[in-house]
Length: 269
Image (cartoon, rainbow, N blue to C red; front, side, top):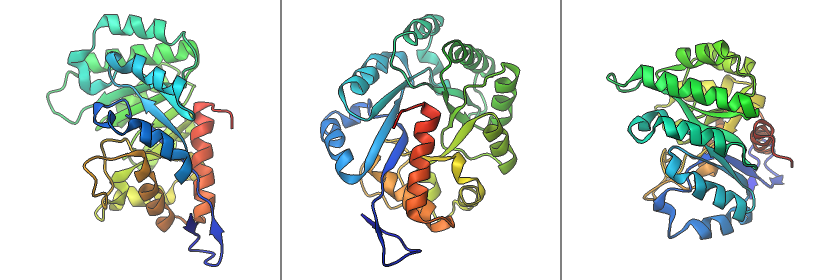
């Protein structure tokens, strides 16, 4: 339960959706079941587990099949090129034909390191966009230092299924271009840091209809997180930060961000 700061006398129930997690990570092996059990009790209405390498796809889909309000995405992450092969792309084509599946991702471009193989990343990204197009699924985008190229390829390949831009940190102009192409912009733990002035400004100015929340657990811990790793429960830290900088009430923000996630992933309420 949270107190609505803008209507102090009124208590509101907050329900949130964690739009990007990696609960398949082995760091959760001893606590994964307890996390799933506790989520509905504290107001986490759903989580999306996003894949990064093929070896975890089956496990991610098993978790989504066995656990309530857990959803799956599978993809080949640009930062793990050495673990991917052309066979993985053929396997992805076969895998996406098996329902249910809510998105393809994480996919994208990552130019953070100066010596990355950009051509191989682009080829991998383009191929996965085409697969997503063929089955009409949204995508989960991982983008670092590459927003312009990602936007160019999305337009060139005429991708119209939308998706989520994970941990968005581009410009307001780039944000609007993503929004125009049907994407939601995701904010996570990075926004909670005192020096995250640019991110806070973006999160305050963007239309609420285009914002979703994430933990990216076990990574991307919020500023005040004292745990060894991030968990879906830190989504409330992200939410509280967003509530401080937006004009809407916490209740309105929770309802909108939760609905935005479900809308883009085509989850029936």
